[in-house]
Image 1 (tube, helix red, strand yellow):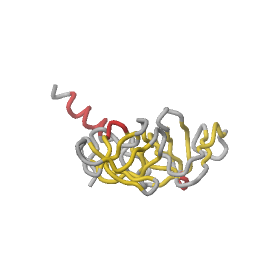
Image 2 (cartoon, one colour):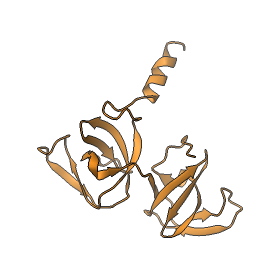
Image 3 (spheres, one colour):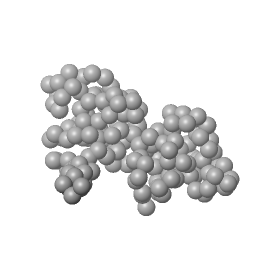
Image 4 (cartoon, one colour):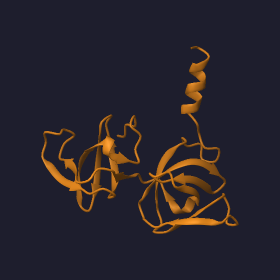
Length: 155
């Protein structure tokens, strides 16, 4: 048990070699379009193009000015860091997700978001996150959002 403790801690504390930021971590697409390449350089083939500004992505690796990212379906590759933003967004994973005025299911529903909506991420407790999209804002259960870790707390 004592031998495994430090190994588990070091795996959870993995940091990027370039930025020294935690890996994996969430970011969003800054650009309206971004080429996704097989490797971390312009000479690598473009496999596809992300075409949604604000889309949440998970950074899993770093190499120079390149970040290896994946979307909620696990699709991804290498993207130039200039196409990414540290602004946090989430993807709604539940159809007609109720967004409450307070982090309480008994509070008033201020909006309902459809599956696939990209919302800006605000404060998060262990179970709830404050989100906003389309001029509406409120609290949603974290379990219905992709782009935030289950144990993540944001102030």
